[in-house]
Length: 454
Ligand code: ADP
Image (cartoon, rainbow, N blue to C red; front, side):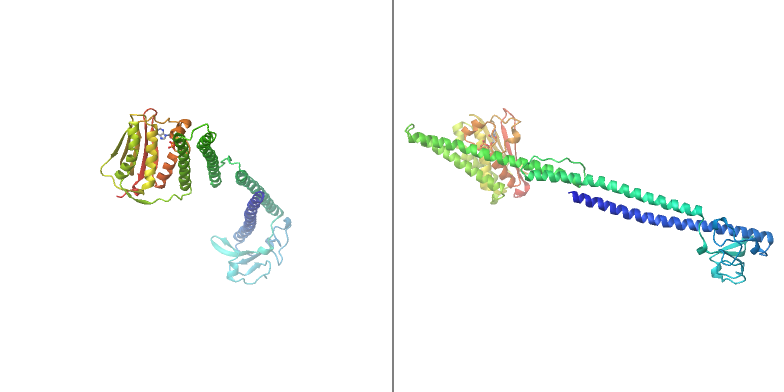
């Protein structure tokens, strides 16, 4: 963690140093060159002006060498030296014959045209009357000019150091901003690994790190939820198993002690509890297969009418017994559906069993199927007590019961709806409930167009 921070700071520093160094060097060089050229041009222009004046006044170059004592090198601490070979300025007439010899030239020598072009022409009335060649290598700046260049260099150096300091500071701040969420995530991940699942990290930005923090928070919420669910499920299973087992053991002990007769009633109670245990184990098996994605579906084309009639037939005796009217309503042009018939029958059976469990004597249960915009809907409607809006979101949860004691007596395992949900979702369908207290409940299964035979 700390080392990535150091690496980042060093990287910022390296980038800063390189950038600033290159710019300072180039700016320094360019300034110096340009400045020297400027000064040089100024001096040369001054010579040209003076010489042009001279020519204008004297109508020729006669005596010029006595009038212009050019310095040996410029401006030579203000000390004026007499003209001597090796000075910094060479003057020629318009034809290139040397009048005042500077460094490397002799008076009277003819300087070729291309060399002349490197100097500056002296014009009088638009006519070139001579040339000034200033020797660059002899040229040096004055103390004031050197001081100016020094000041420029110092300013550039200070600027460069300042820029590096700022880049270092920015690097440290940026590194902290980058590494802080990472170290928070590391701490939180470590805590999760140690079993502390309720971990949240602050989301400090909207960039990739912010997204990472958000994903981590979602993950830990989901992790905590599923761990809690597993704990809850284990507790629920233990709880569900305890009751039938203790009833069975209690009756067996009572018969063994002679407190209870070994009558068929006693055996019926034991058989019922044992079959409840069997159902529970069966349901848990189905759920765990569905969870593992191993609940194999044997899909084939199924006629909805046949399916619904078959399921309702199985409940007819119960309907008679409870004086409940059971109706099947199917719109005529329904296509076949491509589903696992037994599993779908199991779903409908669970819904119908619930409907019968909660619908009072004289009530009505309707099984209907119709086309929906994006598939087919099968509804199981009852005139039971309905479900409290607060309970509605939970009825598909495992072992969820709105009234625990009542339902254990009525025989539900609390897994019927969760199994129905798993099976419907495996068919890419949806299942939900619409219900109001006192107005009955309607469980709706919607199967997508993909599962229809069109
Ligand atoms: P159970 O085996 O207890 O019926 P389910 O998973 O099938 O478990 O149902 C969960 C809970 O949903 C039930 O305990 C009950 O409270 C509620 N419920 C299910 N179907 C109906 C219904 N038709 N009318 C009223 N409540 C219902």
